[in-house]
Length: 537
Figure 1 (cartoon, one colour):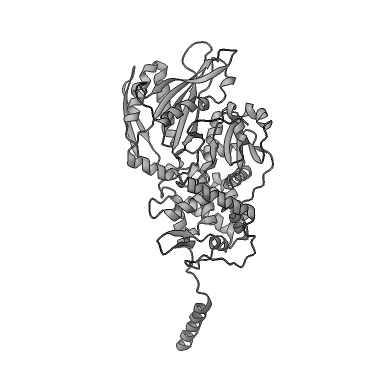
Figure 2 (spheres, helix red, strand yellow):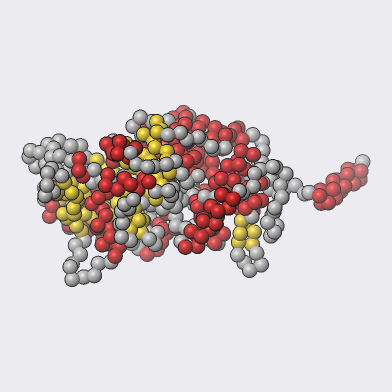
């Protein structure tokens, strides 16, 4: 079967892990979410019995052990991690960008449609670019490869376009990941150029290492305003943006520029304090999918299955794809991610490896003719699935998530009127709590060997959970590349920045009762208490 080569650039994103500062979230949300999980979970909690350097190999529960298939998958995951040891997270990338004082963006292009030599077909190509790269200068391979693939993703449906006199503008985004794991966020706005009569649309695209859709959407609005007056005004403005310092979360950047008719203008750009959520729109996702269907998609991605989103708009595919991967935090999607797949590349959906891809609705008939197997196709417009998929999340944790999402409006309405109501923060906290309940006890099973290396006692970690349903789910989840990379990151990292998940885990473990003594120690403690009681008498 034909495969599309994009040189050194891999279509997709190995993860959109949302990371950032902690402590901006209202405690009322946290307390409500905590109460819901406590009610669903009951009184059972992970036993805090302490750990030893030797890994536990026994347990009282009769869970099925790893089978041959699971063992082969574990070997594959470990070999993959050895080949690509850098488990990249957005949290780490943002810290590096801040330290290296990177530019706000790397490339800005205008992509237009050009009529083909035969018939009424069109092909996308770059017609304007900033900064301009001189032919005499050596272009870095990354820049060359970006410029080759960007037009296809700006117009994934180029063959379907016809000149039009009216067309609403549309914003969307996609992500490219290089072989070294570095991510390039591409922010796009499709508009109809100023003019009379029927004309073809064009796409303005900003390529940046910073994941912050709202910030770049504001820049794209300014670009459109200037391009309507004269395309020559775009270069000076983008030069001012590129020279602006890279903002820290919560900080503001001021950009000065000249606009004919208005004189000197000052544009203020601000990054959100919580950078985990600056590229996420959970509202769009919840408008497209019912809570039950959303949790089913979440479960499929958590176990690294193949998922295809179908929608009739680029913006819907883009927003829902990024939002659903953000639900995986603190884990990071390590596989193919294409929010909007060009029609010419549909055969990528035949890949046997995990993926999340988005496909425009007109391409669905052609997609269904391909030999795709074990794929969950999700129609975002109709809120339905093409194909069966069972939701296999632990039942009590799933019930807690479902209640939080279904009662989200009531929970938000209970906040003080002077508090800023934030749906994204509420949804994020709900799923973070899910993972705290699922794997938040891993520090109790982190041991340090004589040579100073750290390791999680995996068997003891799984068997220590009091819920049989959770233990069975962990049996599957612990065989994913996401989990293996997450644990490897924790074993290798010592200190460093602490994100929301780590903060919630610390709070969760602090609430644990002191470990009870066992064996001889328990007998001696009981004997001592009896002696004290006799002495008091």
